Length: 152
Image (cartoon, rainbow, N blue to C red; front, top):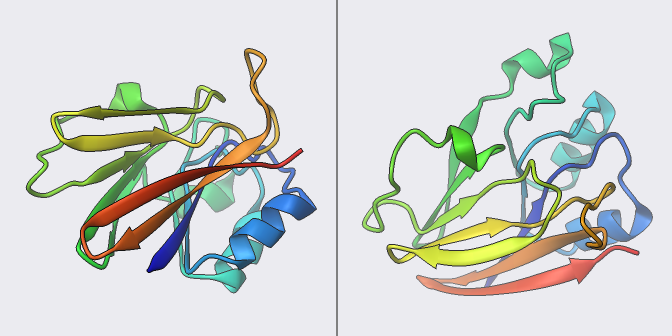
């Protein structure tokens, strides 16, 4: 089993609880709005990192971050984008298994056309009565198990 940390909307504040969760995973997926080169570098030093640029990642260091990316873990393809409204295609379940996004600061998970969509919520600035959180996706072959981790 491979554990993939899903985190988004860090906004320059990575809690100790989030760090502990990230360290226990095999990969880290960051769906944007890190707002900190040092946090990106810290996550990259922990585990293999797939990170995309969010709307608040506008400083020069963020110019090299892609707007979207794909991570392949075992038999699962994970597509990452910050704002789901900027998704320019309908993910094909033959090629994409999971879409990870952020931007709304609200946790959400649902299936559409056999593709799992996950917004892990905000790691530092939850909205709408939500709590600071991230998620862990456990992958075994093509099998998926998703867990929410509260950070407060």
